Length: 105
Image (cartoon, rainbow, N blue to C red; front, side):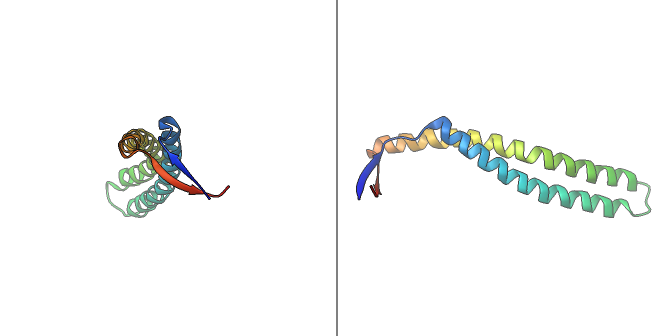
């Protein structure tokens, strides 16, 4: 077993990684919430009220918007906070003198 010392992480590399990871998470959340929004819009819009058409359009349109926008927003926020977190982690690694990792050869 060899002990290696990590002195820093690639800021852009880790930011891209977290951006992609959070975009995938946003896609799952977007499908769940957007799907529920569309179902509730269709169910609520089926009532015989004067605002049923508007309720139905808002539910379906809003659901589609959530499905499209959630991965984009989650991905951008994951990238930005990944950059910030990596810069802070590199600062902490510098102050601590690195991070020891034990690896097999």
